[in-house]
Image (cartoon, rainbow, N blue to C red; front, side, top):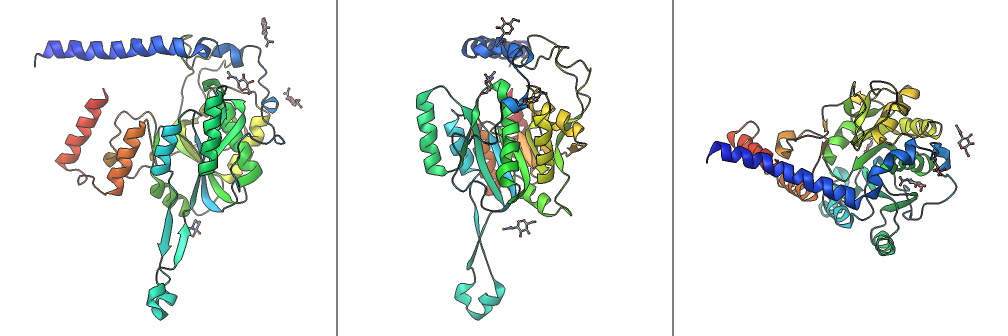
Amino acid sequence: MNFKKRSVILCVIPCIVWLYFMANSSDSDPSRTTHVNSWIGNASKNVSLYVSETLKPHILPKGFCARESLLLVIVNIRPENFEVRDILRATWAQKRKFTVENPRIGQLYPICRFLFVLDDNITFYFLVGEVENNEIQRKLLEESEKYNDLIQERFVDSYQNLTLKSITMLKLFHLHCAKSHKYLMKIDDDVFLNVNNLLEMLENRDCDTNLLVGKLMRDTPPFRDPTSKWFVPYESYPEEKYPDYLCGPAYVMSGDVAVKLYRCALETPIFFIEDVYITGFCAKKVNVAPQKSSLFSCYQDRNYVCLHRHVYALHHYKPREIQKAHRILKEDSCPPPGSILETITALQITSRQL
Ligand SMILES: *[C@@H]1O[C@H](CO)[C@@H](O)[C@H](O)[C@H]1NC(C)=O
Ligand SMILES: *[C@@H]1O[C@H](CO)[C@@H](O)[C@H](O)[C@H]1NC(C)=O
Ligand SMILES: *[C@@H]1O[C@H](CO)[C@@H](O)[C@H](O)[C@H]1NC(C)=O
Ligand SMILES: *[C@@H]1O[C@H](CO)[C@@H](O)[C@H](O)[C@H]1NC(C)=O
């Protein structure tokens, strides 16, 4: 194929895609242009005004956090992402049971060998905020009846309120889960989670406190371009760089850290960039250093799961890619590590994502 022609096409297509998204986002998301005013203008930044320990969430699962497990995972997801939740329930967020052999009883009565059924050491809940649309609300109630894994809290579900969503997660952990769970993970719905790898790491830790880990962001300057989604004016954050923080789509903390961060948030003016606020500002205030792990990936452009088999969390997966990655790992169908086939497949996947 003619090289010039091809590079023109390669240039034009992303431009069209970009224009399409720009046009769409300003139409369909009226808050886009006003988000600066919503927190940075005169709306109060006092977290206590938005987070209540006495008002119950609109939807709370029966027996919420009653079952003990090592890790509680809260999936931050938009209310209307019904299908994504179903995909996650069928992939990494599935409820797994293990039948284990008890050798002593097994010797005496071979028929009873696999008698013991263990629950997984991980618990998943989905966290959403309020929606205006009655039809969506009706479907959420239905979904909650069916799966009992949905929490709907008392704040408007919006991009600018993601910080509030994470603070709410910390609040729920503090109020209901601190006794039954040792660790808390925050995860977004566009992440591929490798449950076994993560559990193995947590189960092998020497102690179960003082952990805040994820993909470390260091020396990151705020966006000063007023048209950026993450635009931060000097009035709201005058420093040149953020403190160290963890990339938002997936991070893990121990229970003690979750409680400290929650208490800190109640006294820290809200800042709309969720990960900077929780794992940066608040962690720094309570003297918890976010730890770097290369096994969390964020904004990864190469997302071929076979190249990252040891990873805990891989960011930027579409629902269908999550299904595929889950299937590949389940079937153990990765090409041999370092093989030509692995390289070719990885290249194919990368070029398709352009
Ligand atoms: C915010 O301030 C502007 C002017 O500074 C004012 O017009 C507006 O009513 C205020 N909004 C609220 C919610 O107080
Ligand atoms: C935030 O609001 C709470 C509850 O209304 C109040 O007690 C507290 O003093 C406020 N904090 C600040 C810093 O204004
Ligand atoms: C965030 O949630 C609060 C509490 O529900 C609400 O008052 C506020 O309007 C929301 N902000 C945005 C930008 O959605
Ligand atoms: C869960 O993790 C704890 C702590 O590592 C361990 O003691 C326990 O045996 C695990 N439970 C299961 C069901 O794997």
